[in-house]
Image (cartoon, rainbow, N blue to C red):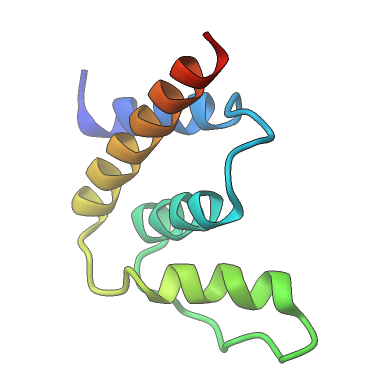
Length: 91
């Protein structure tokens, strides 16, 4: 399986993460996903009154400069880690 296929598979698995997944971890995944699919942040930072979008933008900005391949690999690793934590927590 190639990196792109594995990335897409884990993007689907990420949708099954429990509601207990922290916002911090969701933002990390968001930033890595955007970096892997779009590349470096390409929009202006949302305004102060748009906290949710601002946090998402900040998470994306935090991984600026990573190659798409590196972002995909980090994303896959993070999804695996969160799924393992969820499995351990629920058993």
